[in-house]
Image (cartoon, rainbow, N blue to C red; front, side, top):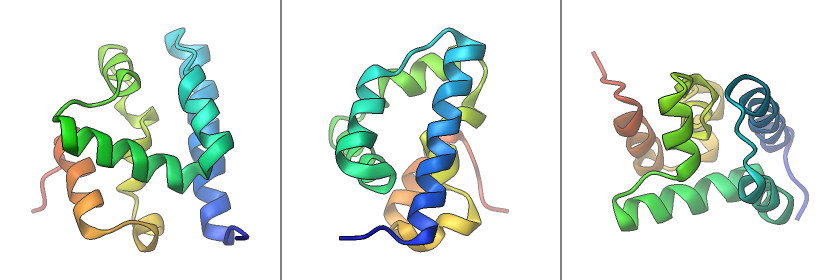
Length: 105
């Protein structure tokens, strides 16, 4: 199935963040890159969110970026953006906001 322009934009954003993470945090997310290649950006995000919700643990990448003080480079940060809201369920967005410590006011 062809990806929508919005799905392609989301995927491009998380790929860009992946390269920034490598450059700025010395983190090379090989498995994440493989997942994007195999499942696309949105599919990868949905799989990682579901896994984290099931296990109660964030991904190794999230932890690495947290320790680098760069949560802005996480996939979860992109999921929370207003422009991508239509790609994810309310539950997926709520989970990402929770792990990022974003509270609604």
